[in-house]
Length: 403
Image (spheres, one colour):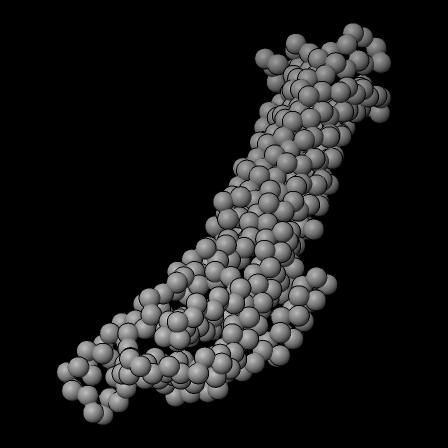
């Protein structure tokens, strides 16, 4: 921003110091251009007239000086726009600053086009004066090729009031066409600049798309068991509803003008469910037990989604990781199982989030299928048994803040 402020101050100073052209009514020519056309008209009406070259140079000198100053100002604006191409992540106000540069560029180039027409006229007059004085034309000042060369203006009648009406109309039509041709020069010259400025103004959105945010989230909800895991070959465990709690982080990456996004991340969680009873397979016999199953998990996650609105995100996602699955089971006051094991776990989910304040604070709602692999558990007495895979449906709500 410091670089922007310095450049803005220099541009403002140059515009304040810029010599101001006298105001004129619509349809009137600038004074210098009018004098040039008048001198050319006099020379056309009298083939022997030889105006004083020094006097004409003095009359044309303010135009030359103004052209040099305007060209330098234009070069400064173009340099600043070239510098803008190297900016990364425009700060608030920088886009407005470039829009101001664009307006200044249009103004300076329009003024240069007008001054170039006047200089072309003076070059033509001085060349004709030199020819009539049998001298070599003076070399034009080294102003650079900032404008396309133009054919000289068609001569105007020296005294329109005494000229035939049709001849006057034809002369004015030729002169009007010449002015119209010149008015297109600024537009032609701005084509390259326009495309570059449009690209630069699109840069903030592109940079926003590529910018890596970080989402920190917490979530929790209800665990609904989908099955009764086997406990050995002859029994299965009935489970009741449980709960889960998670913390995690994500790195959302936007593309396609922020309509689509991908969010890789990590998650740490605890998932619990209440054990109701142990049921014998193939019979109605049950064992009155109490206990819990607890899983501590660490997962890598990925979401793929889109934004139908800037503040609304809808996604599908999944994850894979590991979980330490622990079984605690008691009956009649005696411990039956208290064992754990590390298993592979995975999940798939669909959800939506809404930025509740427009400040990056999202409220998320999601539905998830989750599966944890089987483990070996060993009772205090007896051989080890296999506890089958656990399958759950989780309904969750969370809050997520985007940095």
